[in-house]
Amino acid sequence: LDYDVEPFGRTIARRELRDFYVEDDGAAAMTLDGRVLALSALAGRIMTLIGDTPTTLAPVAAALTDEFGEPPGDMDHQAMRLADDVVADLVGSALLDHLD
Image 1 (cartoon, rainbow, N blue to C red):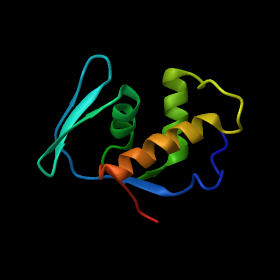
Image 2: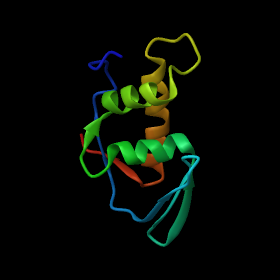
Image 3: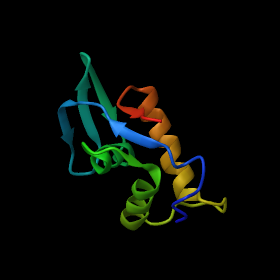
């Protein structure tokens, strides 16, 4: 993976979560601001990879690739694009923040 590819260099951070629970299959559930949210295994794994320490997308995408393998497709930086799409959904759900 190319760790310096723009626009993937933004710093992301996980918001404070309560009742974060991960199933054996990787799917996750949590509460946030009185809402119960269910996440796919990929989104749940991204949440656990980010943890309490802000990071950029590249190490998250690299860890996902190590764990799940390369995603299908022939576009450049496919793993980064997939991780970025899921992170954007998590930002939209107010579970993650972009810090820069």
